[in-house]
Length: 334
Image (cartoon, rainbow, N blue to C red; front, side, top):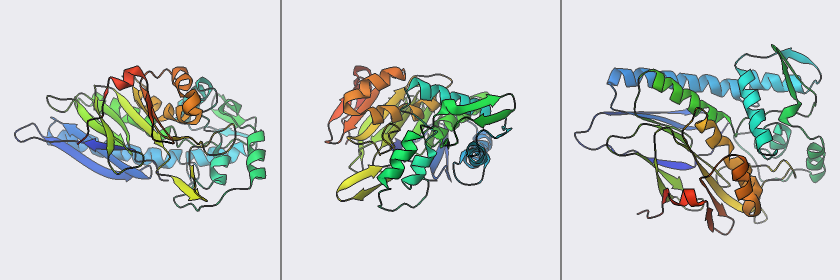
């Protein structure tokens, strides 16, 4: 499973400063980096190793199509109204993703896994090929939604056999929140966690904030810099990592549940989320409905998601942003 790598992180260690410990891995189908500042080496090594182990467990558990907890659930959904026992850890995830889906007015809809598969994006390698429009129309008409999933005690089932959950727009953010909570519980005061461009900050890097660069959607360089405050999270959705082109048209992995087709008219959306226990999750989720809503509806979508700091780059490269986001971005990138 490949995930979007959408932000460039700048971690600059100066001479004579307390130690910066950083370790990279490849989890969730993307590059993952944990950077800890000012902690004893042994502690930094121990907690980072645990975070990466936790990420690996989450990756296998939440994978939509490889064998794991979620893929087994999807198999039960297909047999609706058959039911089975649910893994306890999945209950809050399903409930949380359902709440966000309702909040977004259905633009964030993890239940459309069949559509994502039809477009070929449930794969590490996909080809430039359009699905049969009749099949797209059929899957849209089946109207799978998170509200179709019923959890009753330790049992779960779906009232709609078309439901197939794909948490590709949720899992990275959820993992950020879990990792940040764990690091804080272990006494880590300053850290930066980056999962393929979804990033959360703990404390700061010495006497300055953690600084990240927001990737330009059409150039191999950041379009702006952003200083993250303690507990803030940032996430970007774009059309430039998981996509294919056919007859001059770009088709990205962000599917509009209303039409069954990849969203058009937007190159990238970045959101900055205020500190809170679910900041990481919201940074992953909120960018999707804003992207799908497009130039005409992005502000309303951001408001629905409770996001006041958002930036959208349209198909022509024009930058749109909220006033609160404009105050935080530095476009003077050398």
